[in-house]
Image 1 (cartoon, helix red, strand yellow):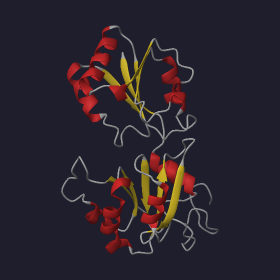
Image 2: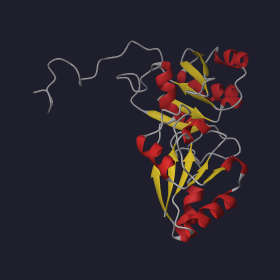
Image 3: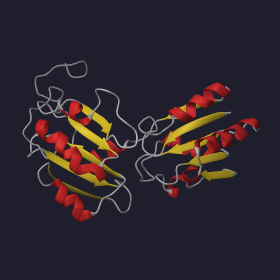
Image 4: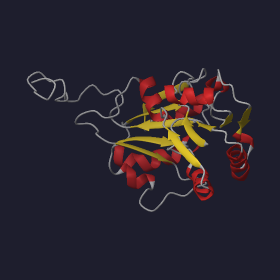
Length: 248
């Protein structure tokens, strides 16, 4: 028996890996995060038990897994995006280790990747930014020392900020000294879902644009000078005259 922590992707049912889809269709027990994973992701399953974990607390989820383990049934534990990022899988894996229950993580398409695709953007442009910081805004869960937004912003790298749209004004205040008022920013609501929407602007004007849209949750903030920037050097990868293993 194995518990498969499956990344279902950002919302579009076609943005799940082949492996993830195969496991969902073959596991006899499915526990899925119904508040973030559309039921369409479960299409084609033949599970005898399908449970929406949005209605459960941690102990109830572990009890379901223990019951499946007693019957020798594999479990598809379906999370949104990639389960290794803000998926709360660590707190589920810890008791599984204590119980000796086998598990495997199946990666998925991240919200950051989906938002970059929607914007038609590369997040790592030569001379502009070669790093991407994935972080969140400190709200109910405090940030560890050194990971405050103002500290991370000192790098001026491309930044993807989760769980922060309700605190956009405070985020802008922390970013402004490091990125500048003219720095591009985008706020993407429910990327790849049928009702996806987004706004783009600068740190100076984005707040008004977001308020007009009414985004209050399930939105990702992307900030950095890679957005809408055509003034960058070409990489050596495709440069004529640059030799490498496959192009002598």
